[in-house]
Image 1 (cartoon, rainbow, N blue to C red):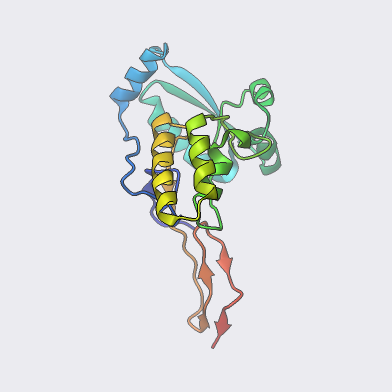
Image 2 (cartoon, one colour):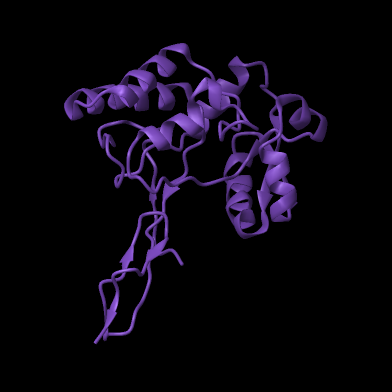
Amino acid sequence: CHSRTRPANSPLSPAVFGYDKSVEGYKFDIAKAKALLAEAGHADGITINVAVQEPEANIAEILQGMWAQAGITLNIQRMESGVWTAAAFGKPEEKAAQGVHSVIASWSTGTFDADLQLKPLYYTDSWSPKGANLGFYSNAELDGLLDKAGSSTDDAERKALYAKAQRIIVQDAAHVLLYYPNDLAAARAEVKGAWLQPGGEIVPERATKG
């Protein structure tokens, strides 16, 4: 289960190599949201469909109430896991035919490295169904940064490249970044050595029972 969360400022979590805490995410600003909608030709509001699995439906409902204040109507498409996966990882034309405008999803890399966090989600060649770039985001500058950082063995250079990459992704609003969950697990007092990875996976291989 999850305890309290905190707003995500970056597409990387604090546990991942390359995370830059100085990246400034978007704040909750109704007036700014309304102004941007008007600038985009939607002064009277806009309707968005979101595909969500039942366990995340409460998140969609919270967003529905928040976004309504800015004139955004969020239609929630609740889906069973297999149906959601097919919809989320569909091709552009398939999503258009199904009326899937957006999805609610989470992502955590078991390597704790920015390459396997950013490349599947934001690289042009990772468009679904090939990868997890579910919104078909594409930025040639970002692709170049990710290629260079992924092939570098210099940690300082990689951090600098990923810092720039995070700022591009946030500025482009490739995702609506929501929050970082705090993963919790419990064990009996006599159990030692079990490890909880960021993302919630329990690693019991070295656990002992005293």
